[in-house]
Image: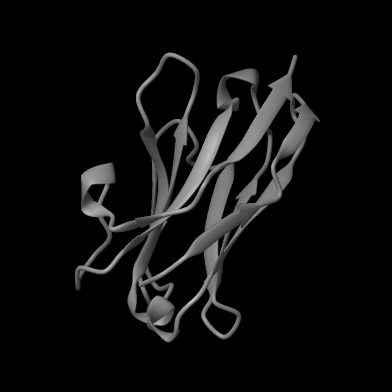
Length: 125
C-alpha cells in the first residue's frame, strides 16, 4: 500500500511558476512509475506527466511540454512537478498517482493504482 500526499499548490499569476511535490509512504515507491494528472471544474481528469521508476524516462501531455518538468528523488520518496510559464488554462486540481505495474508508465488514469488527495493550482490572468 502506498499513500501519496501532494503539496505546493496555490494562486499564481500567468507566466509564474510553481513546484508541486508528492510525498509517498512505503519502501515500494522507488519501484513504481509515477504520474501527475489534473482536473478542472466540469472537465475530465487528464494526463499531465509521468516518470518511470528510475527517472530515466519522462512523458508529457502536449499542452505542458516545454513548460512542465517531472522529476523524482527515490531517496526522499518524492516526485515533483515543476511548472513554469503557467497559463490560466492550467488552473485545476493536480493529483499525483502511482502505477505499480512493471514497465513504462501509463498515460491514462485507469493505469494507476494509488492516488493523492490533490492540490489546487489557480493561475490568474
